[in-house]
Amino acid sequence: MAINNKTILLVEDDATISSIYRAKFEADGFKVLTAIDGASGLELIKKEAPDIVMLDVILPGLDGFSVLEEAKKDKSTKDIPVVMLTNLGTPDDKIKGQKMGAKDYFIKASLTPGEISEKIKEILKIKKIK
Image (tube, rainbow, N blue to C red; front, side, top):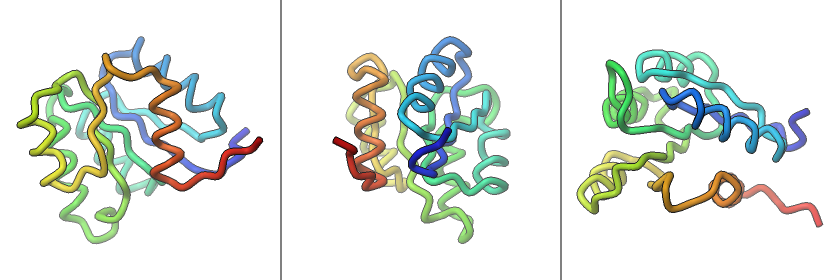
C-alpha cells in the first residue's frame, strides 16, 4: 500500500537491479512503475506523470540522456524531477546530466537502495514518520 501516495518510475534494463529497487521503494510506501528501455520509459513519463523518475543512463535503444532531454522538452513533463541512477560516474557524465535538467545523479555502486530511497524522500520532501 502506498502510504505516501507518491509514484516512482524506475527506468532500468537490468531485471535483478530493477527488482531490488522496486522491492525497497515499495517497502518504503511508494507506488513503483518500471520500464526496461528508454522508449517505454519516456512513454510512461508522458502517460503516468510520476512524481519522480529514476533513470539509468545505459539503456537499450534510447539512452537515459535522450529520455531526459525529451522529458525536459515536453511542457507536460518538464517539471517532473529526474534522477540519474547509473554506474557511469565520471564527472563529465554528472555535469551533462545536471546541465540537461537532472535533479541529481546517483552512482548505483556507491549507494544502497535504502540510501537512494531516503534521498528520493528528501527530493520529494516526504516527512519521516517517527
